[in-house]
Image 1 (cartoon, rainbow, N blue to C red):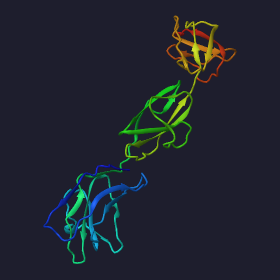
Image 2: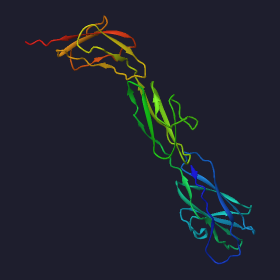
Image 3: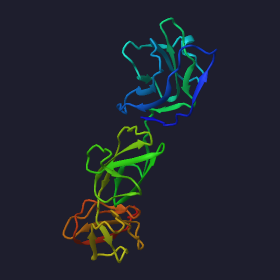
Length: 287
């Protein structure tokens, strides 16, 4: 929520010289409100006239030259106890002008004092609009870039907690090397806190294959390593070596069912370690 501090000089409007004086030194501050509120309050302050008026008429609207006494939206402020400020609530984001007139016992009104330029109220929340790459399952570490819908600061967490302005601020791609849930919020330049956006990244860290001989022969040694600084694969391409089908096994395990040579060896279920991969070609039998 933001009220731009852009009050210009005061402008006096309309009418002949009246006996009652207008207010002076009109200014505005803001009240702290919840960022998720649909309204926001502004405090307008002034220096009262030398002769204390009976009451004031004021209006907050989007028109720069409103005459409060003639407006259907005017609000009457009793001045039996001297007033020098008022809290006004705006209904939505937009540019607003404040107008005020003094009123005496006889009903005479002063000229209008209003802000020369608008007070801009921003209640719209931005969001973290894109994660690249998107959440999902990956076999190696990911570098995630975040995009925001408007100017502001992104805050994020990787431990499952809800991010706040005390969380890490985003400045460059976030490295995710182990399974984590990335949660992020955007706090825009007006201070509005956006909704939490959450993406889960599952890092499988399947074994890395160091495979020196891809021919379809027995006795090939396969080393696996699940370190995160290398490209992780979870399958091995098998060269046909004259065969159209093959079988494989690890160490003293059982041979798998016969597979077409285009089917890769799947090692995604293997833990870190060293294995001997046996591959044998299977010729098609013609009948």
